[in-house]
Length: 557
Image 1 (cartoon, helix red, strand yellow):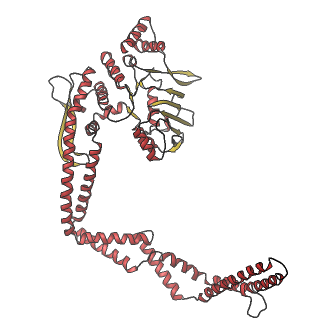
Image 2: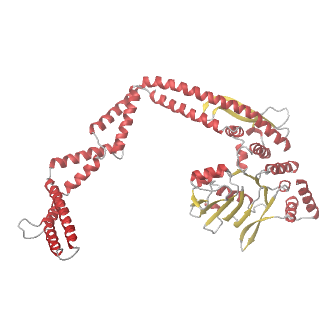
Image 3: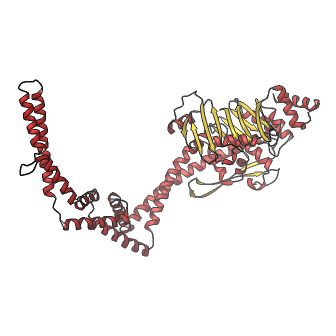
């Protein structure tokens, strides 16, 4: 669960540290005090898209940190997969800093992370419901996902999607092989030419590097010859004996040390070592002489190297950055040409494979569809029960299935139909539900799905929009029920909802030196009563509104 939220330089909030508890946490406060900003901050630290406009005026960066306790196993597994080791029972710290230059820094457990990592982790930690989620109810394509979540069909859907992907791949191959005859002829000519051009070159891996090395030697032959000759002179001396080389000098040094070794310990070993150096130098001299003897300029070889490198460069421009890539292109071209030449034979084989893949996919889609239909009745009944409690007993839901061609979601086209009054024909939810109805419907749906997603924290942003009185009290009670054994955080404008809170947080603002500051404080029982009275009666709090607020709190126990 979310145990602590730290915010710095977010909009009107200079700095705030907010402690949450398990159970029902409620935010209240005057309009414009920053309640929605808190939800935006939570969304930001969970990896949702944000902008530098969220940074408080005059500041260079904003920071949001969230501490989570009792991290679920699913989140621990993902963290381990991402390379973050968090022990069971250990708190998890997630931080995001947004700079005025548009850059973002993220950390998980104090280690660098990416925004996408935060987002993938957030879905396992917090389920945020805002007005956008209510609007998603209006999108029929989203409805099937609710059924799949309710029926725990994730693995079954993944199994089907794997088979459907295989079917799709076979269909694509058939489409490629079934291209028009003119296109086939053009492709055949092109591939034949490309294969012939690459094959004729008889490329060898490592050939280009070797040719470049040989060209470098030929281009610098004179300098190399001069350097090798100078090296031989230094090692062997001149032929006239006018100057001594290093080999002869080492021999003389060895003899001198050996003579001294007759009278002094250690010098014989030194003489032996020097003699070894002389033999090594003689071997090196022989190798240098061989290299010098081989330094003959061959114009024909130079021309061959240049022509060969031109050929390789021409092929590189057409088929790949290096010889291995060109040879890989050759193999692909041969395979593609074979596909065209033996298209009829391959088509028969692929048609058989498509028939098998379709049968497998259709059978899995049929099983998936049956389980969805069975679950839909139970799902709708669960929502119906929740809505009856929320004073919407006249609203009736009907699951509406239609079979369609196989797609990545199966064979089902599904939409929730609704009738808001007795005797009315069910119609698509998007056509007749009002804003207040949508909020309560989404709350009902969240309660039905709450124990299916494994997420320990639910956040509701203005779930009570468009409701009041008895319905508002029912929403408060339902949110209280939803918080049993987990954590619910709610932003509300209604005293009937706030009265059910286990932890009541007040957001207030004040102006100092021409700047607005927001504070967040946890209310004790006396202050809670005063805040509920303010919500009910406005800024002027009377004994009557205080008494009514106290009565409302007693009823919520």
